[in-house]
Image 1 (cartoon, one colour):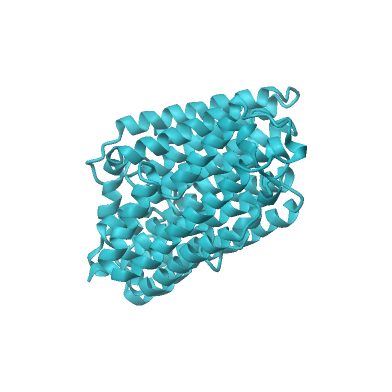
Image 2 (cartoon, helix red, strand yellow):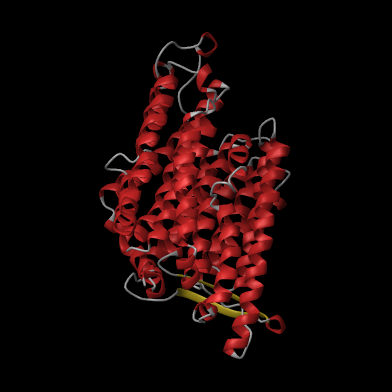
Length: 489
């Protein structure tokens, strides 16, 4: 049995233990902490054992599951999935710590967090398309309930919109997977759902164009990309902080990961054909996301629109098909996962202590919450791409690749980055300085269970911003796999 299988089972074991101890609600958070902590420790062990110089998948387990339907329980990690697997394990543990004071239906709440962690870990490690789809759908269920039960005033609307958008995209994706299953079977002489086998099949260009189009739609909804993005701001605004952290930190990355793993790696010819459309969608997402963020009075909605803009960098870096651009795209997924988690945690601190996220109703918080405001401004700096943080390395690499491939089109990308500086500084000036509202004279500073996760995330954002080679070493193999000659030609 692979260690990956054990790590996938640990959160499920935690869910079972939480269910058994449901009569003692206080035990739920401790069980969730231990389960997610063991997953994090196991993922660190995987990182230590992973050989960046080796090609292909490592820690593989391929076991027949439903042989009559050609389905296997197949898991493994390579240089693309390992960083995202690590990111999921890290955020899964930190959101449990951050949620330490949750008491409303605590067993159900922490059980959903663990189930969500299992689903996302499974998406990033599955090597069988049938298993990949199961994990993909599992992720939707806990997020739906987290938003629908612990969300804000419009939680029912936001959770249903999230479910409809993402489930429709999933159905389109499964149709594309089915088409690849039957077509690959005709070419190979046997049917299989194994991703490594199907990746090795060269499909005719006409088939690639058809299937890649479906995959592009499905994964652009998840990423999300304008104009398929409207579910995201609503989901973020209504979701509890922990759900927003996981939604921005890892669920959006499922779209980028799927586009790379299933789209670009299996259908490189079609990716080249769709390149002009992808470039347009990416540029619109970058500029529109930044512009929309500028118009928001809700701090959480501002951060949500900034996520749309930053995911546009991922899409554009992939479209450039240059080493710098692709590396920047993959790096951006991890960087945004770390930085956006810190941003939403900082926003949650303000909401929990002040009772509002409306920028127009806030002000002067630095005098009452110096630690929280210091961490928040550092998260803003990281997200706006200040040198020294991961965001700078990711965005600079993408812009370098875009310039190499598309020339002066990089100016539109730079516009999005400049707008980010503007809306973050504007928001922080309004929130942290000026007159303190009369109803906030007694607000307290950040709690320890909010402080620890934010500090960990910001330290990582700074460390990998100053020492990017420590992460790039593990990503280089995925970059090499993506630089296909059919696209380059």
